[in-house]
Image (cartoon, rainbow, N blue to C red):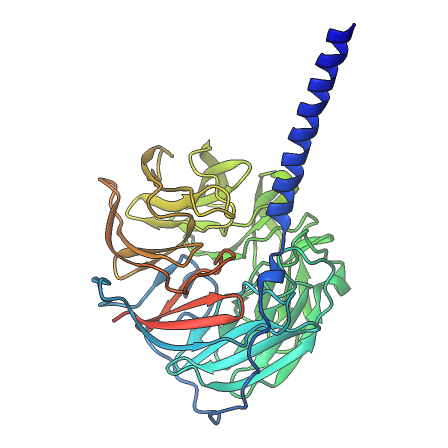
Length: 446
């Protein structure tokens, strides 16, 4: 009898320990980390007068660059970083207040850089001179927040279209601003049309297609389109659960189409009216589909942390599943496809250890894997992969299926930081822009 009681006590203790460990893990996973963020500096007065809006060869006007594939048009970058990289400028006022963490990346058109921020009550929009960091204009709108997971600031990256810029806040606010002087032209909230917010807030970046600006919706529709000039609702797609991945325009057919990686699947839509052409289920824990689909020719690659990855192949208006496996299972690090191979990080994003992999596009076969580049994000520039881990360490990597090879590296580009640097580096016109919470740093890459 005593032995049975003793065994029961041991079992109860083991269960309690496992439960405690699980709760600590969830706390670590969902913890917003904002008590570590100090009050940032005061926003300066406008330093420069509005100028003529330029357009340059290697602009980065939207999420994942001009073609939404993570590839920069910048050429002739410096390939030896042993003496470091030249810091051109830095600002530290993008977030005001201890709970205002913001993950949104900057976008660049010519000499204009637009980036979002946050204070305790408002979503903030800044336009800086991309060459020297001087403030051209800033504006804001009051944005309510439903929860505090990972801070209350915007996650989505703006989209610059000609003389306008579009922003999407974490609470469903879609806004259109005049790029010249920051005048707010219109603002709509997707919840007014039946939209719904995912656990961590709206994170899907807007895209512009012809006369439409399109965002993920959730609730009554997986996506919705608004007139880019007036904000009038043009269409809503089928019902579904919202995800975190950004829409992608698929350019591999005679007719352009729209990819939406929503909470429990991926759908190809007609961007003219939102009608579904095909859909494939992809159900994950907490509907956590966050990685942007990568389209290359007739191939479409998707991945998520809890489920693995899948390669789809389109044939006209039909689609087939080419392969599915768990070789890559990425939380929110987007892949690069180059010369028939997939390069990306896999694994969970709160710790700076994971695997950076090369996988064959046609078969899903792993070619090589390494833990030498931490865990982070990757962009493609001048024929190379530029990786940044969550500590701000930078690696220039040769994209080769033969072996993993670091060409050069630059440690601590953000100084010593305490929380993960999740925002992807942006490379435009010979410069690299790295956002870390309230800071934005510009380095010369040429």
